[in-house]
Image (tube, rainbow over all chains, first blue to last red; front, top):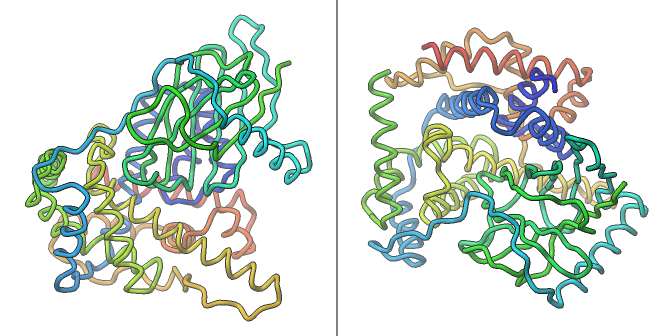
Length: 238
Length: 191
């Protein structure tokens, strides 16, 4: 993969200038290039610092009197002083088989609705080929009625997820990514967005599953989904 | 440079204390960064009450999930300002979307939050070393690169929207963005 393309997309990402398709292209490029690329991580960090510097060039606006106390009061109402914060899960976990649940019906309905909405072809449909020695990289753009965009790039042994415009989950919630085989969900991992951006990687094969889905869950990450899916993508095996 | 590193070390320590539920540490970070955060939000949404709301949301996100800040991925300052930036841009884009829907329906367009994002970059410097670095970096940016960067960062516009608005090829917008950000990045790293 062309490293220049990744740099170009990272520069725009730092400024908030990527649309959904470009965010997907970045996810795909980074997955193909290698999600652990130190140079990419350095560029991402330096571009973020450069973008923040634009904000620092603005003349600071003094906060109104009483605003600090209002914010602190709101914070303490949620978590009193001296109470340690729960640590939100960051790393992706390995797949865990979980029992089916009635939410699968909702998942089917959402998938069908998305198919109608998108003319019957989208639903992030891709062709997966895992027969080669290294396997092909596939990119799945999930569809749903929630704000933001989520794409998953994956190969035979794992993948990466990238999202943009993703709001924080309510409370201390996290976004959970599942594969669905029949009506059986398998957890790929949980993650929390940062500044609307969602990035993470996971181990485990996706092939053989019918769908991918995202739900919003309370932290810590559950073994089985407890809410309806908000994003769905159909995996079509080659 | 040493003072900046000390500032960052202090920030990291304050975040650790916030994670333990230290109210004074939370107040310390608020006092240090809320004015910058409010300036950024105000520049983007142009309405003080909305800017205040965005700042509050960002600090609440810090209090709820201090581990969202990863010191290995950059400074606390950059992380917090990116939270603010994202929320502000998200709001602007929602407003823009509503305006388009209203126009499509033939209704009177609602007021748009986005105003001219290229009207100015801050004119004055304070004594902060960081500010001086930024100003010198911005000063050497060619006008066409600065325009694209400002439209994107302060206007909340995507590259394709900027291309449409400026009647430029998308590739030109992308290359100006990249070249401008490279200059800024280099200036920030080397200064």
